[in-house]
Length: 244
Image 1 (spheres, helix red, strand yellow):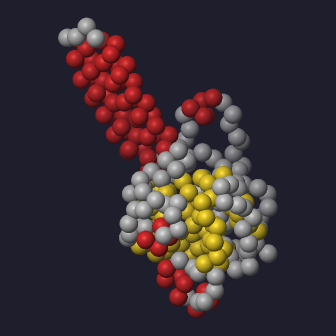
Image 2 (cartoon, rainbow, N blue to C red):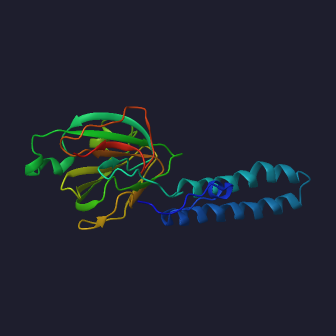
Image 3 (cartoon, one colour):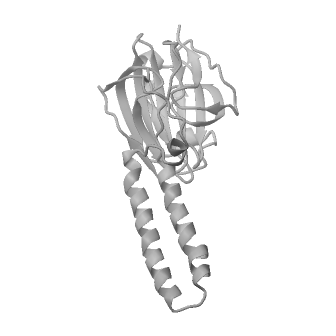
């Protein structure tokens, strides 16, 4: 449970906490903005069109740099009190809910062979927070990276064809489920931050995906989704279902 006191100031919205993974990208964008500002200032010094250089060039460059920082924003989350709830690992909107087998090689594990599980897919646009959080407290049993293509992440075939990283997780009650990070049409980098054997608390960060993507959650056996296609998800707060 997050014990941090929520902040409601304007500053917290305009200047949110930035994930460390995004700091280098933000500073690169900021450096480019400064370089352009110096170049535009030099050109403006020899031109009467001073305002046009700054308004049409410098301001958009700094806004772009600000947007890069915002992409990697990492706000605090406040989960519900219910301990048996499985929470969304990602911000975004549900694009698919299907019954299917476990992802890739996990489907060959004896206890999962021939069985189907409810899969809830959360699509993240470039405007969503892209830090991924644990749906429950638990242990990472297996991790499997698969190189692939970069189709639109909202399509069903993305779960089989796109670059992805699968995690098999054992919850505290012994239930097992899987989470898959899927790179999308714009996303080109999955950034996992955990390894097999790691034990994490619920809503603890386990990775992120850069610039638009999707998260699949394969719910534990017997758990049905309590959400619908099109519903907006908040990582670490929205309930996907409840374990028995």
